[in-house]
Amino acid sequence: MRKKLAAGNWKMNGLRASLSEVEALIAAHPSPSCEVLLCPPATLIAAMAQAADGKIFVGAQDCHMAGSGAHTGDISAAMIADAGAGHAILGHSERRADHGEDDAMVRAKTEAALSGGLVAVVCVGETEAQRDAGETLDVIDSQLTGSLPDHATAANTVIAYEPVWAIGTGRTPTLEQIAEVHDFMRKTLTARFGAEADGMRLLYGGSVKPSNAAEIFATSNVDGALVGGASLKAADFGAIIAAL
Ligand code: PEP
Image (cartoon, rainbow, N blue to C red; front, side, top):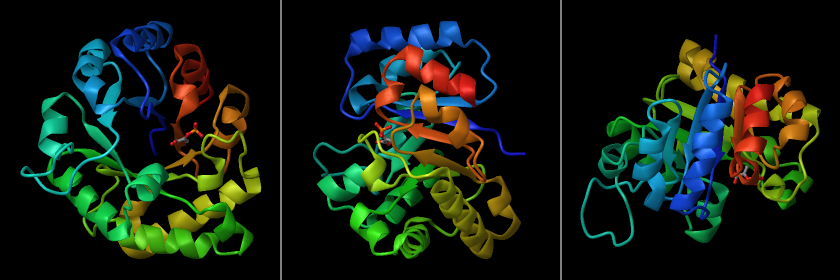
């Protein structure tokens, strides 16, 4: 039985004052039925981990592939763990687009995260042009193949399907389209990882909000969500958590 996961990605949002949202979230949902993860900007990881007090998981939004060295502005898995986080999002489409991260880089970063004891939340998803061209499943297949290391397990790896055209746009795929991709991912992962793939959580991400969360969570092979904008406010993210 896969434990559901509600993961929030604060992206480049949040100051220390924003941690009141974390406190409000925990107060409103002291014993959620799913796992809850928030990934703030790096500047807030340590303070959020302190505010979370072990009641929710805290993660980073990226992790460098090297353990240390001359990489200005980057942070390593050991630094993330040292700041109090246990997860890292890898290969988000904004990093793939803004920082030129390809599957090989995402895989190297995922390997670094796993070696550092972090749980990797690895993102895949097609662009609108790729969907229109009928390439969605091929794109997902090659991103999964290229981005996941061979030693990915149910315990150390979560996959997030995030269609690029659904992120921050208010648009979502139909439930049939989500089910098609999630069923395909389960099949693809099973072909590579065998029975281990049964336990891997598959999150949907892209314009998840309180009003559409329940129907998305009821969709085949959806084990939770990666939420951007709606994770910033305790009321919205709390309603999504309650729908899981
Ligand atoms: C995201 O960036 O991971 C995301 C899903 O964003 P939003 O929920 O705002 O579409």
